[in-house]
Structures are given as C-alpha cells and as structure tokens.
Image 1 (tube, rainbow, N blue to C red):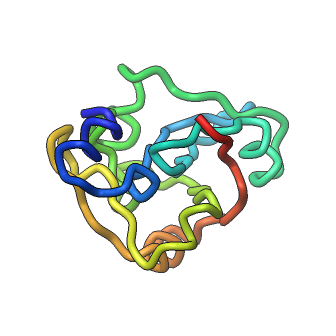
Image 2 (cartoon, rainbow, N blue to C red):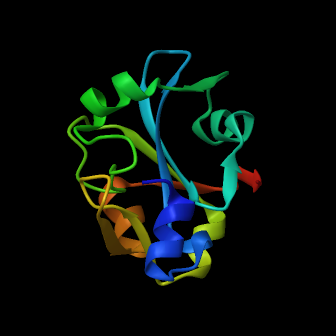
Length: 130
C-alpha cells in the first residue's frame, strides 16, 4: 500500500507515515532511509549524513530480500539484514511514527526514540517537499 493510501484509509497524517527505503551506498553497504510519507528522499543529503559519496535506492525486487519484508511493508526496526539507518529529522517532531508492519496492508506504530535507539540511527534532514 502506498503511504498516501494508508493515510486515507486510517486517517493518520501522511507526514507521520514513513517511507522506509532500502538503499545502498557506493561502497556496497545497505542502509535504510526513513522519511515522512509526504516528502521525497534527498539522496545527496543522505550520502552526506552517512559520510559517503553516493546512495542509491534498491530496486523493489531486491529490497525485500535484503530487509526481509515486502516494499510497502518494511518496518523501521527489526530488519533481516543489519544496516545503518538514517531517520529524517522532520520525524523527530513526533513522539511516535507509523511504518510498515511487515506486510503491505499493516502499519506499526513505534516511538521515534525507539527507532533511533534500536538502530543507533543517524538523524539528519534527508528529505524535501514532494
């Protein structure tokens, strides 16, 4: 389910429903980029936050095998593959956020502080208006 569809179906503000984007650095490291559903990821800003030259999004068909979850159902915690996580600083204005709940038709509400602490996440402005 697309984040906009999830927002419409649940009545939850789209800014609190995250896009969890499995990505890869130019060095081959997998990373998860977590941005508000109403914004686009800024890959250049994500690369700067990670201290690498480039970050690219993984194709949908590969992202699921890396994260352990289907695209659209990827949670912000508990991934199959250990990877660095970058949380967009926009999300720190909330106590909780909503992310994929393991399937494309479920949402999981998690504390923003848990996403940061459980992942040792980098918090940085990595999104732009959609």
